[in-house]
Picture 1 (cartoon, rainbow, N blue to C red):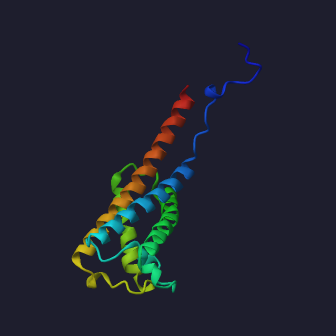
Picture 2 (picture 1 turned 120 degrees about the vertical axis):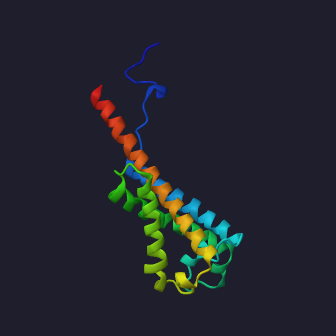
Picture 3 (picture 1 turned 30 degrees about the horizontal axis):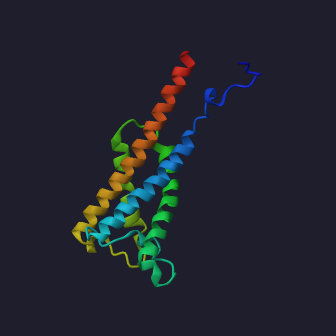
Length: 169
């Protein structure tokens, strides 16, 4: 069979996705997944907060307190999480420890519950929140930070390893 200068589709290599794009996808998926888990935690009363606290500063109407508001907030958290993942990518991607992601999650929790607290109406201070809410949200933020951090750092390490292998060939 003649090739006629064209290679078969099955023999063509797919261009690998850039590390930056993988970080963005990781951020979006992480934001969706962990905010849905937060919504589930609020459903089972592990926390008094739900994802729709993101919508509280805006006057959208009463629908923001229901399922529609929570699902919209989950999507918006996914979009915001892209920025969070890009920040991790820029600052911490080279760290080979899971502790960087855990620390990143704790730092995000502190930013949301202490720094941004005055900007979110209806969000009481940490000392006024129920103990279950504080523990649950800290755990969710730690797991979210670990997910973002470990995923991005792993992809970075894999990328470096692949580049080293290509150079050595």
